Image (tube, rainbow, N blue to C red):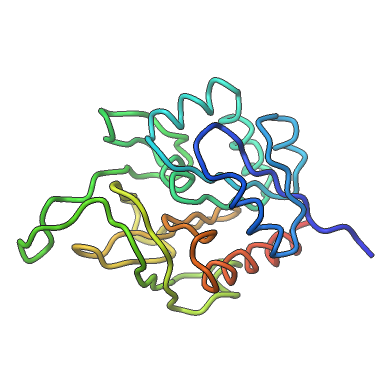
Length: 215
């Protein structure tokens, strides 16, 4: 019997790493929580979770050389799953606490939710709680997922892809925003699958299946 795929959960000091690792293990994956670039590069797939500020996350990744390890892993076409801040950091820049450069792997920026919705009503920020994600486009992950599902969000900033087709899922909060992004070996989401019960399990099962086909 072959071993399960090994996933590197990147430990850069920004995230609920243990709960993410446990959720991935429940989907049949072998998980290593690591801050070691070499471990990231030899893993079958990489998961970048995270909560907190964009600038702090990028600073920590760079300080440990993990930014380059993530880039190299993606360039080698190993499946990448970004969660929450792990989605935002993929983009070119964020306005959080002043302009900050991101990994630059996806064209676009990260911006704060507006104070008012499309109709002019007050919009509560941060966006906290359950909301529907409408998946669209073509990607190996999307072949395993329903076209709509409900996930748990906690965030004040949202990704704005430079090209609409980069968005793999949309959610309405004061207007539509990109709740997921996908291209090639990258799939990333703004919500927290590890906190999203059965919907989160479906998404992590889809990731496990994707990694299994790429080994």
